[in-house]
Amino acid sequence: MFRPDLPIIQDMKLSIVIPCYNEKNTIERLIRAVLAAPFPDKEIIVVDDGSADGTRDILKSTIAPLVSQVIYHEKNQGKGAALRTGFQQATGDIVLVQDADLEYDPQEYTKLVEPIVEGRADAVFGSRFIGGDSHRVVYFWHFVGNKVVTFLSNMFTNINLTDMEACYKVFRRELLQKITIEENSFGFEPEVTAKIAKLKCRIYEVGISYAGRTYSEGKKINWQDGFWAIWCILKYNILR
Image 1 (spheres, helix red, strand yellow):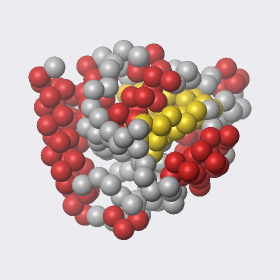
Image 2: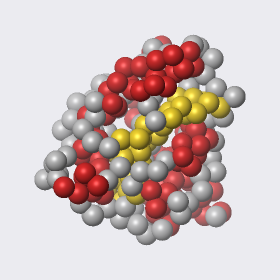
Image 3: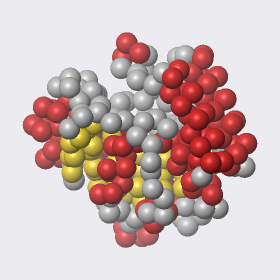
């Protein structure tokens, strides 16, 4: 079992890339939760993707002194674009994707990085559908849509993920350096899955908890993103 006090962890750096768009109600609590996460050497990179709700004021006044970098996109480009910017700045041995809402718990970093730290994996995907962790019950059709796109992705990649669309994805930095993220939006998920699968790297899944948001609470993904995900599955698995 992995422990944060193992000697190997003292020599490793974790880069946490946080794409952020209009998250004034959650960004400060999220950053404080990330700061408290159980990993001794953390590089926190926040990429504000053109927020217009007051998030930037919070980032500049409160968050910037607490993190390694805050990068500002002048206009909204999408989650993939924000992650591409953050990945380019990451210097850690391991790179982890963290959404700026409060749906995912940074206290779970330990089990997410464990397969990489122990030398068993090159990439780790969090899964909301395995393990015994708590999950908020929200939208049925989101669940169905997730299962459909994960199934289609698995058909083409020939890997057996249970939750391709989950936020938590962790990579060895040298693995990320072998691919170029092209998608600007939520197409990042099927794109990066297809590209790392083609590299025949070692991929693990880890069960995670999930405190999903409703649309009134700020959830952004919609049915159109599901159709775009299907296109990206075909694009990056067949046409590239």
